[in-house]
Image (tube, rainbow, N blue to C red):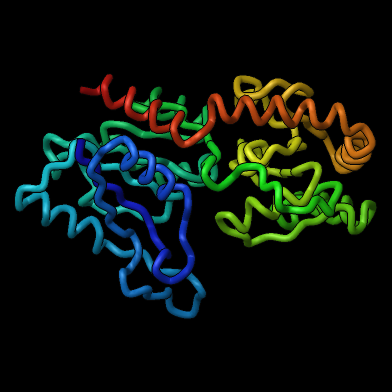
Length: 308
């Protein structure tokens, strides 16, 4: 099988984005031929006045040129959190190929991905309500929720646990994380902007991994924290986000309702290590069973077979 992947890459500038790279690696390990087309300027161009890479149509233009000259991928998969789009990314320009758009960072980026629903064969969304919205309005979508790349996020036995609770989410919820920090002090570590293995090792430095969503959404850090063998403590989401379909409360994951509740639970599970380790082990097993790169690629290929 031939697969063309469109995703933004900082790799040669020392800033790799591991999520699509993990999917690409899984495809290659299965013996598929994979070609990557960058959504960024290959020369590393930055947006004027900003410390941000500049999106480009170079990748999609190159893909279309090669397609016009005989290259025929079975699948064209675009993975992006929302800013990039191009009129060339349309199934009418790639007859015979199955176009798939991964709608990253939903629900907050839903409006950016919405126009693609008529132009692709399949949308894969990390958000259950967005998936439903596509399907109710003429799209073809599957709930492709977050996962952990088990090659990166795993227990690191050489990392010393130095915090009761660790997170990389930064300031959240109008002072919620600051209130927890003020109460727990150095026992609660909240630093951010780690990537790849460095991020995994940071999560392994705490007995508990803490998460607080920005938009009331299911977040990747939940899966990554569990894959590192840590008990995850995260904010309780609305039922329509379908977290209960993913993890069992107080068996695989622990929720908090406010800052005071989070502080109380951090203290409780710090003092009750046997219970904390039981939940951490259950969460780890759940992620390894259902929420790895391999599991997501299996799900994607099953959907492709349904389209065929």
